[in-house]
Image (cartoon, rainbow, N blue to C red; front, top):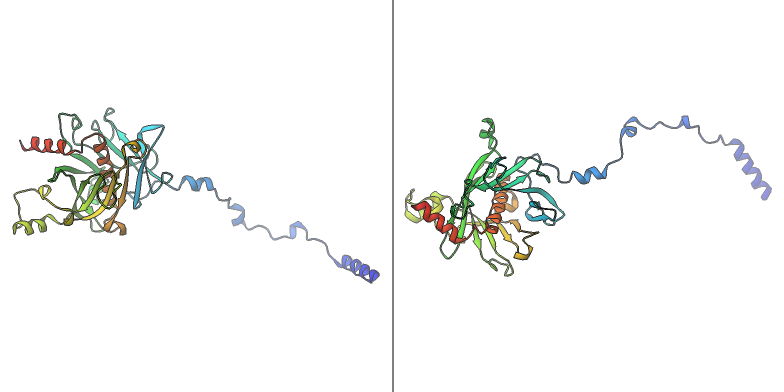
Length: 312
């Protein structure tokens, strides 16, 4: 058996042609030779690249977080601090540059750097609005231009957000913006709620954004006619008169240094039916409200004084 096995091995080695020469192997296809291995570093840095949409892309839950090395800018993030989306810059007005010029406000950038393009701007109506004797809490909001404005080479479209002192010690901030695919213009109102308000008893307070019914419908129901002696902003509405589409929660005092607010989209906003322009308007006005509150300019006293001065 041993000799037979040995002869079999010898016979096999004689008949074995040996390994193929390297030049007989199939050449690597050019397409494979030209492909470089994937760069995971590039993928990581591009997770939050500048969006192609002029209005940006916003998740349903957002949080603001300051960096320890800078108090002039903060990051608008998703559900967590690590999910950084956009940079928000404080504009003091001292440089007199940019869309706001010498007016103070906030600038939302389309990226994580203050050198990235501007998405939206919110600031004072005039240079002296923030002065204690001015009592002017009107806000200028700048958004990307609509199609007609782009045709006229306008850089940004200007909107206004105006405050209103309500009954029962409440305050509201009212604005209008185009909604949905048809860009139908609608009115919205940020309404302040106190600490422990809403469904969360531990909530430190903040603002709810109400989607208001059309002013003509509301006026007809109240007066029986299509006109009213009061302006749209003077209509007294309860929360039942509108749908809550966003909630701005201001964090507790000890946490404001690093985490000033949280913003959550609700109601019709969950499906995206209100559109990208509305989402951007909601985000920039929420940022504006947070800054007004931090500077003591969102109180009923300040707003009531401003209304009395305008009435004179």
